[in-house]
Image 1 (spheres, helix red, strand yellow):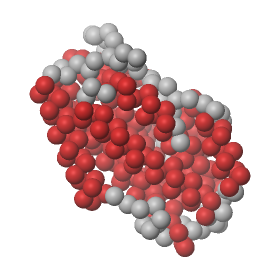
Image 2 (tube, protein in one colour; image 1 turned 90 degrees about the horizontal axis):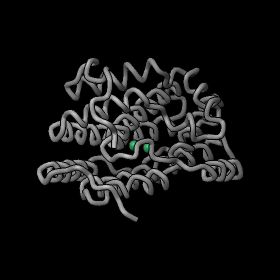
Image 3 (cartoon, helix red, strand yellow; image 1 turned 180 degrees about the vertical axis):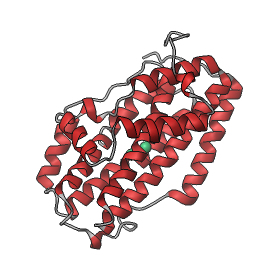
Length: 268
Ligand SMILES: [Fe+2]
Ligand SMILES: [Fe+2]
């Protein structure tokens, strides 16, 4: 199968590899955690409201599409060592997220083994697809997705208000991972802005104007699940704008004007 080449010059490639090494070294030193030993599993609260447990299930389901996230994205970047190695490392970290959420649902008594098996089966009947057939747009999309995911976990943790120490700790650990992912992919977008500002701005404009969280389309009862997330003030359009778009624009040194206007470069 042929794979599209990534438009990277040698300097850009070297910067991306260095960004990955910085990310990897920091992760190995400060961020590795253990599902079995780093969560206070003896402090699970089965009395937590069912609507909170249901959002935990929604996030677990979205994380379960990991085989598709990796299988679809790796071919786009296999000739960029930094991006390919990052996806391998990212996949390991993401694999723990669905595992730890699954374990909490079971240990806190919110779901049975059978219910979790049905949940997995339902997820694997569907398939996540790339939103953009273009490696540059994909990295912008991943940046936005990771920052939005971090906000989702942080606000779920707030909604649970420390009522379950096990859930509180696991959401803290997952949220720290997601923040690190958002930071890494934002640093890649910064590198691409230096490499080709016009093309990268075009992708930022495209993604910001068409972004949707995967739960919308991926899950069989996605609409109901997205509405439940909104009802708990975890994530909605306003949160997306104020906690994802604005901070990203600020950090990238861009303004709202940069993401407005007609396309100047067609997306390949
Ligand atoms: Fe995750
Ligand atoms: Fe992530």
